[in-house]
Length: 492
Image 1 (cartoon, rainbow, N blue to C red):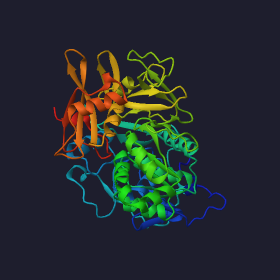
Image 2: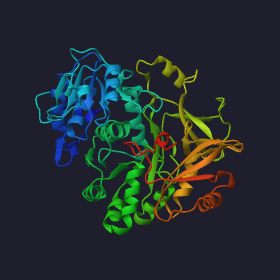
Image 3: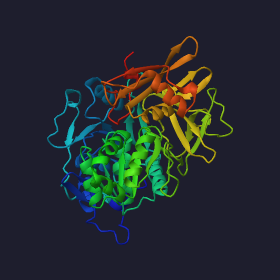
Image 4: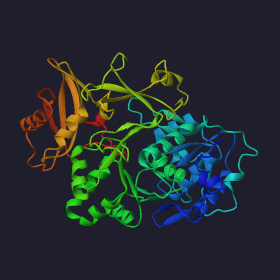
């Protein structure tokens, strides 16, 4: 079994200090030596043979120690979202059947998980050594599962994506290549740890490189500025976070200076509006780079640190990842012109192996020759840059004979000074097939921009056939924990 974290399990690289801080959550931290001791002590208490354990994934040191201990012991991790409801937790536990629940001492647990044997994680434990594990355990290989991460169930209960160790290593090493990510980098973020963005990229990524992660606990502009001013080099966030930073920048020159110090600002999990890109660049001189991935594939593409940070795109396929766009009948697009819309399909070492206990769903997710159907729609420029235009199920609008991606209309609407938030959907229309509907949160609820004003605004920037035919005004758009707009939750 190849170690996922060489700095914890093997001889340290030349010049690597054992007192380097690996993890910091608030005012609590662990050095690499302390993390190895705590994880090694916990690993000895976990079931061998590739069994599963659930982790109560709060933004705390205990979550990181639990995940590291399980992965290095060859045990499969099932991260649990502490905000999940009883029905969803019950389904996940029934489906994944973990042997134990790893949690922080003192955590109050809901009834759905109380019957599961509980092991409290002691982050100050010593005496265990990760490098000693494996002598009495069933060997675990790179193709064996590392994580079972449950996707949000929009049309049914969540499905457990089985992510192998190979995919974790391949994605993190590909991002290291794209982002010039090294052990000298210090990452700051405030992302949840039950999802691949916050957990795999945001915690396991720095540990694989031998670097450091500083978790804010709760995201704030003040926290970001503090960490970037005290040595952090990278910031990971979702568009909601970057939008808040963009809103704060005009009145906070200290934040602008701090963001300007960062080596890399990375946004993911949803598209960052071009308007926010431009506002951040104007204030800081920095470009936010975007990447594209999902639970089943980890990361597929990214703008490179040494590449062109083209706003509105998610860059190029990562090393080892094949990507193509296909028509509705599955025929691959033969040329890329920056306008033709197709579904993204990917193939490579970053892919999951299937959905737990769902062979039917697994078979339906792949083509006969091994391409994964992402359900995401995109266009691709002639030089290979990919621009996501939305989900096939909710964001592809067929209107008047055109295939239109909701994402580009949303970006155009957000450039209007009277629009705070925007979402675009399609609804049946007897003449057009579907008509474009804009859902708007105005900057001023008492004086919102008119329907005709917004339609003209979009038509001038894109094309007349992409203008919204209906505008609906809301106080707020429904979003999930990662900041993604939940279009299925919009009023009917």
